[in-house]
Image 1 (cartoon, rainbow, N blue to C red):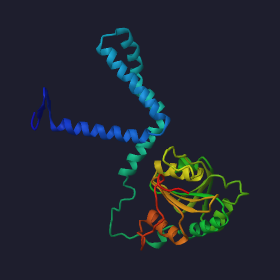
Image 2 (image 1 turned 180 degrees about the horizontal axis):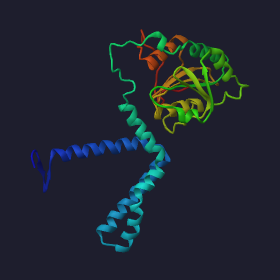
Image 3 (image 1 turned 30 degrees about the horizontal axis):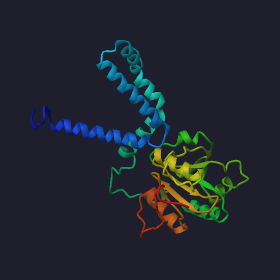
Image 4 (image 1 turned 60 degrees about the vertical axis):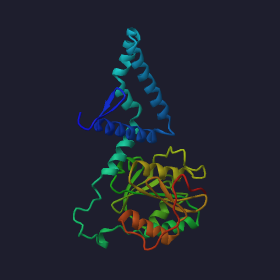
Length: 279
């Protein structure tokens, strides 16, 4: 074999080395995906049965081999059923890494102001809600389709305004409990249910709103605005990373950066991952 080398009685080629490295990376990513969840224990149990099957097959135990063989024959189907949430999350992660939705085919084409969503109502509403210690959860849809989550709430399809956002998140409003989803500059739905993060590194000081925001950004490319009901702090979450205690100017700069790829004019200090920030 061209470019191969021997280790003892084994002859290994460069293709074999690359193959092993790719499998290692795949298993590492799989471990990161499953760690901290019940699915990891199920996966380890499934692998234990598979290793037992290989052992009994190699030792010639025909009866046990046939029994375990019947189980392994439906292993792929059983794995899809057992790990459907994890498989979906894995595919979404790959999709985010390879998505072409936000690639500019014509780099000379500039986005005009009329094409941009007006973020002023969100900044002003967040400031007012923060001053009243009223909780809020607003998810901005980017390349990922949030229709699945929007369907879990009440469809609105309304123009964004500060007063409408204040009305939705008013503590006496029947729509305040849940998230508002923004799609193409409009309020698509309210009272939406978001997936709660299972990351064990999320500090216990973070409430359900922050965990829901982290959970959505772990499986989509959405940006989520959170106003804490306990502290009144305003936060932004993207890719599982939490940017906490943002002032109005910082919030506006971050929204421009995350939604429109407009870099802030000066560094913003209020940043941190979910594992690093505390109350």
